[in-house]
Length: 304
Image 1 (tube, rainbow, N blue to C red):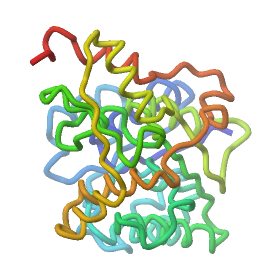
Image 2: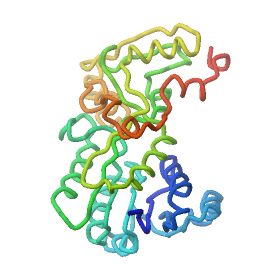
Image 3: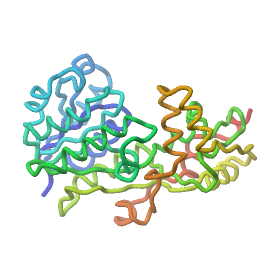
Image 4: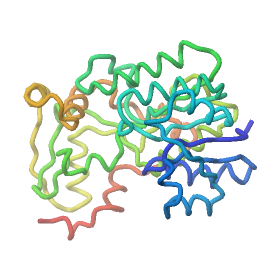
């Protein structure tokens, strides 16, 4: 059965992609689609564009509103999809899950658009991940609200973020986190938006399970070869080993990028076989790394 109402939390890069896909797929079926935005954002140009797509704007503050207040907002919707990540602050994801349960939401999709936290486990170099496991425990330990976790891997673009240091075109260098055989799964936000809408609207209904997506799964060696072949250049190669990254993190334990590098270098729960994914099972075309490079990096403009 198509959900009668869906509330999306947040309208950042991922939230906008999810909202646009829902507007395309669910709105024609008569589904009420809404987005919760901070009151200051309700009058923005982006908000107006959502109104033009028939998406309702709900004022609210995920970080500062109480659990009870949020539960009252969520209660009007049978599906809530959280697209606001760690930037909302520590403890926010737990609060949102509790608010969904308190509000009697039929199905909640928490912010879990990332790695397989069950495999990584508690106490990883990225301490933010422990809260993701708290959310899973909260949802699994109750029966009133169904839940759906969508694991997408890293945003594809993050591999090419200069600050992350993996593909550093300015330095003509590609770096392996861990080793050249360490693998990583990535999906573009646009594909996550399309796939999330399809997963939420799937019939028969998907619930109380983890669903995986993948635009690509590749080793850092394959990544280096793909960048070279697609851009027609030869990048220098460098390994950032687990011991080196752990030592760097020990020297600067509050640095989030160093936490992420170390987790991905360890290689646990950060990659899976594309054959197990929703997009593979449904034969949905997605963007792999080579396609992303062709679409986003023009070779002449990126050669120093």
